[in-house]
Amino acid sequence: MADEKQTAKKEKQEKKTVRREPSHTNSLSVVIFLLLAGLGIWWGIGAESPAPAIILIIIALFVASAVKIARQWEKALVLRLEKFHRLAGPGFFLIVPVIDTVPTWVDQRVIASPFNAEQTLTKDTVPVDVDAVLFWVVWDAQKAALEVENYREAVAWAAQTALRDIIGKTLLSEMLAGRDRIDEELRKVIDQRTEPWGVAVQSVEIRDVIIPDNLQDAMSREAQAERERKARIILGTAETEIAQKFAEAAQAYQDNPVAMHLRAMNMLYEGLKEKGALIVVPSTAVETMGLGTITGLASISQGSPEKVTGKEPAGED
Image (cartoon, rainbow, N blue to C red; front, side):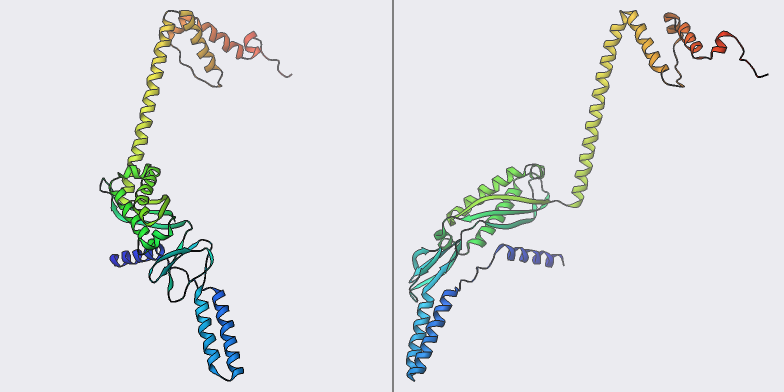
């Protein structure tokens, strides 16, 4: 069942890659044929003889097959007696019927061809599916028509084999992180292979890299562990810097007791600003800085005036 799905997917991809050449039946040839054939039939009826009609129908076929029109973006390959004669187009041109033939019409626009590589092993033996797009153009229509049987199909296969070669030489981490470098390397390899066919590769873009689900989970856990490691390192570095600053502050306060007292009083003040704050101060600090007297006065100042003066509030009669 899996093999059938794989085969169907490949056939679908090949149909997308190799397109059929459009029909080149032009309306001018049809109009010329109808006019000459109609004139021959009318002449034959008037002359009461089929000969004029037959002659004009043959001439109509001859003239209609000699008239060709190439679209603005096309070049027509003209063979004379099955040998290369010239390139014609774009626009109106004539050929010699029977002697000349136009087997190939070359599209000279920029063509976008999707291609992929399925279950291809990377350099570190990881199976991946890679989807990419190739942008290319035919710069020499003669080479594209004469040097290769089907230039569209040849370009598609050259791109796919080059992609497999690049994947086999690249680590998975490099493929995920350095797509621009791989795109440029692919472009150079494919362009080198298609240059003898008159094809120039403008760019290659990797659209998606699909890796197995179990590997995705493992890579996700690895990335999470790496982020946690970096966070712990940053936290440890910050703790080290803080400890160094505390050590420097201790050295400064050691030789300057006045600064130490001022810092302690500032810390006490900051704590007392909060309502309901509870501060535990060592007794030695209280005795040294006279904090007992200061805190006592602060408590008395926050009490009611009645308690400070010792008077009882006036009651109602």
